Image (cartoon, rainbow, N blue to C red; front, side):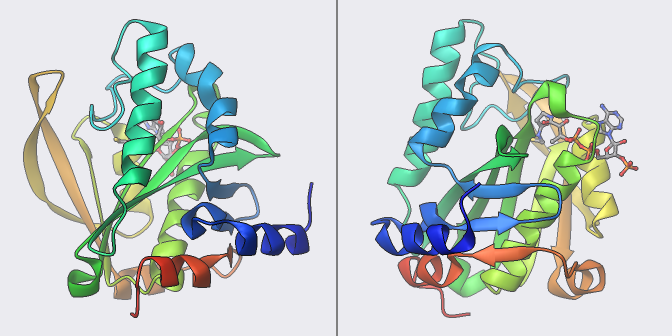
Length: 227
Ligand SMILES: CC(C)(COP(=O)(O)OP(=O)(O)OC[C@H]1O[C@@H](n2cnc3c(N)ncnc32)[C@H](O)[C@@H]1OP(=O)(O)O)[C@@H](O)C(=O)NCCC(=O)NCCS
């Protein structure tokens, strides 16, 4: 595994700093979703391992798509669309989750009018074969550390179908408070979503001291974050 110096050099060389961000926890690592890392996740998406019951939200990833190649292409376009529309006002940063150096899922961090509200949203999936072992919880904790400790967020929001036991449990355990419900569509059908909100104060009460951030200063500068 390359050392910290190697990654610092890569972060300096990268023309697009959000791809140089790394969040390292005792169990896993979030790394900016480069095309090389995405390519290593393709077999999971192709085999259907990114979906679940209940399924994740449709947008931007069409994991419900029955044709494997169309699913892979739609997923990649969704990630690239996020990357291609990043501005200071609106950004979606995608990370690949690595456990023992192997990609097992993705975590997105989304900011809209972040300079004004300081609000981030999170969205994630873990490969079916890697679920139920705490990866989803640690992935969310890593994303929150980046948001609050790295980017200076004021609050984090999350939303999952009311029957998405895993996602809702993660929010509850990490200190979020219930924040109402809202209708959304899954492949055209109405689904009730449970909303969650984690304030900076509540995050501080739950924050961990064993998560490392790398490449954040360059990312903050690229996103014009001054919080
Ligand atoms: C939601 C998801 C990311 C959870 O990942 P995971 O690695 O399985 O989560 P964890 O192992 O950290 O489990 C978190 C908690 O939820 C519970 N949990 C997880 N899956 C569960 C399930 N299907 N039913 C009941 N409880 C479940 C775990 O027991 C654990 O509870 P605990 O903290 O009390 O021990 C994963 O199921 C997934 O990728 N689903 C598809 C995508 C998705 O729905 N994303 C979120 C909404 S868009």
